[in-house]
Image (cartoon, rainbow, N blue to C red; front, side):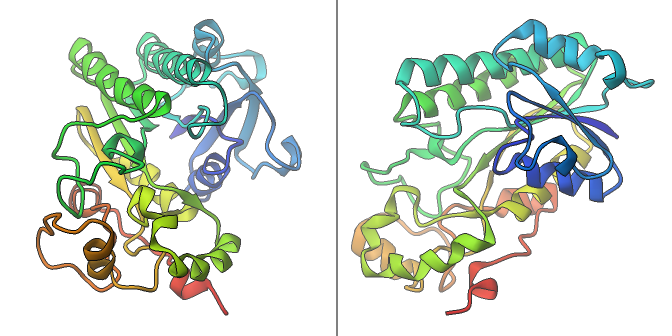
Length: 293
């Protein structure tokens, strides 16, 4: 496929671009900034186009074709990752406006351009992060209503609702939201053993993470899924960031919270069962395999 990737210069975006190209796709990456190392650092099969994702006209023009970036067959699919990536990086109103408008622009431009295959970055934050209020049960999953606790999370929650309505308007469309956990590179895993000293340091997201390479796998699997309509999936690694057992962590930090099913020793408390079952998602990377003390 010829795939447009917004936010392709970001932490997850550049790994997604590389993964898609490695699997035979061509990529047009849309971002305010070129990737680290400049445009020349892009893998063969990927091109860069500067675009303000909150400007609907720029996004639409990019998807319809711009000069030498115009594809003979057009864009086949859109991956929307471009956003202010976390709460607290900008003022609340700026975060909300940027992320909500850029998501609307992506969905609306895709519809206008006849692109029916859309995958986008929702967020684990819609699950109730930072869990100052205990989760309803663990592992948390996609079955309960979003609990946004920040302007950032609210923008992601509204993005999920926008996806539902855009797919109602165009029943041919597929818009999959991936609720990514905290994106990590392998060189960050050396920090993980320090978390064991205080379980409260990472309770804010139930001690979850997502290796960027597995995040890219989830994007590719979602693009390949034959489906229509809007759906959401939690995307995390199969384990936690902790060496302590998951059951012990729940008992200490969230006493009384229901544990559903049998919990593996280090099993993620951000359930990936649905992603595994529907998308065929299967995490390949763990900090336990790659970190050397």
